Length: 574
Image 1 (cartoon, helix red, strand yellow):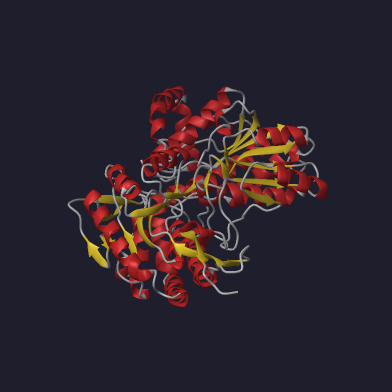
Image 2 (tube, one colour):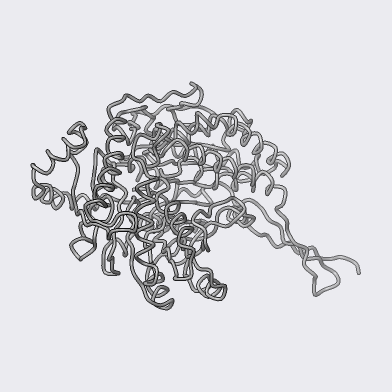
């Protein structure tokens, strides 16, 4: 129930996928396997959707030549995946960081049962983790509430020093922490190392912000009194995080909470609990007091009961959630009975607009970075690509070439890998369904389009996409890049803003007046102008519409864990 992208509803489309499998001839599969000289298992789940060709280019003037280049690139990608999947992979990290119990009140605690954590690339079990239930969740809340009364008395400098020690330990153990992320989340090791750096940066940032929680002295209308506005921590915060950034989504919330003087109970995603437990180990090593930072891992089956405790217990003053809009609404309803303060970072559906005046090469680079990071599984991934008609063909052609040259499928621990698996088979089914829907309505598959081994998906480029297709109406969370042609700025903005969510948006233009117009007109909380990667602890993170409530990061992030108290000091002699 509490996960970043609710994909269970897409199981109903399996029948349709099977029907397409049956339409794909066995002879074509045999020929492809023989040409690629690779094990048939790679193609057991492979779905051929379409093989439309690009127009010939200046360097290649025939369709057959272009197809040969594309087939060679595709063979390279699939041979790499086949070779990677034939190897054996094992998670090798230092023993103290590979924790499998819950962490409550400074103690490692077992539960009545355990649940498996799987490597999404291979499907192999890498650990069994304590399946904490409502009882353990309640113990964690009670411990956090008890610790809050002492933690809030720490000076801002004392809290700052401890957060800085935690930051130093994350930096020291970055290699092992990155391995944990890669094996439980599937992302390439280079991206996992980047996430650890990003994760640590929030502890660094909020260790400094802890000492900058300023109140106000307000001029009084009366001579015999002073008006003071004090900022105080709200109390215990329930932190519910997704699987796609299993380390950074915790520190972005917890760094602010602890800096403010709050204590926390973290419920990590059921797919990725190991990173959260490693953070608990390092928090303990840093000297974070018992009860201040608690972690209650649980299975998908136990999640609803644990979520109920974390969102309804009267000792919890605040909830912070990153995940789907649908799940966020459920949590808000549960929290409403006790009127808890809430921060919600929910679904995205980011537009990526390329105007005629854009630098096409830079726009292609931005599109690659924005779309294919973590195989398209980020909440700020570009989901709808709108390209003005004057440069449409050139942009699509260059983008296809970049995909051929830069994207390599494989296990995340392989150094050549740029695209790992999706988190599970349900995620792959959702992408396949969107591709099938688009093709049925007239879209052309220019690159990719296939479901491969397990939850691997070929990075897919669609042309001739229209706004009535499913991939333009809902978040994909996968490596699907649909390109829509538009004619005017007004048309692009109408398409971009025709969504009930608004987290991030991107556009490329060299027209200064247009930049100001479009940046102000986009109905999103984050705008990238000629830039595809935006996240940094110094800036706000959050959306508008149904993309959530509140902001994380920046100097404003800590305010989400603070209350403002008005103090009137009267009876003073003038």
